Length: 266
Image (tube, rainbow, N blue to C red; front, side, top):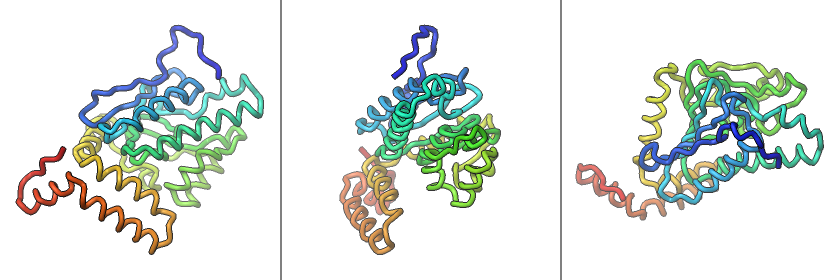
């Protein structure tokens, strides 16, 4: 792995552990390079995600970015410096590993998109469980414009966006605006730029006040059942709900509802 020797280079990823109770924020922090997923950024993300995965006190992972762009995808200059098949295979495998780690986190992941998200940056947004963007943000899987089909970004894109819309984005490389991204299902909501912080905080805090065990069990079931036959999906969902009913916080929540009071969750 190539490691930067520039002592003035910023830390590629900032970790804010005190965002609010139950929430941890990872901020992409190389704005001069449009927060490209360099080798250094990928390593920092992988390490941070593995740490988050082990944190039972964290319910929500917020992914944000500094600068004008959310993430411009891979660092093409860095990639061009090593035109070797095995290097490219290793790099894309590392990126895919990071994306899978993100998708499989027990915590709920939320992308806060303040600017452009292209190629693997769009992939990062699609991999998050939820996403809110400024209405000025734009999205594209634009590798095809350089002769490189965005094959790895196509994986989560095609699992969020309808097949024909995803394939049109992949074959044209054209940008879509935030409102179109909402209509396509790529993101949940687009808000004015000056309202982005408040909208994301409201969503994150809402989720963070829910019982952790129910969130984790529900997320795991939600993604597991997507590709199951209908009857099998219902069977798995029923088993999950039966177990959920016995969680201490669930028992307290139902009792509180019956007794018309606020639940006193752990």
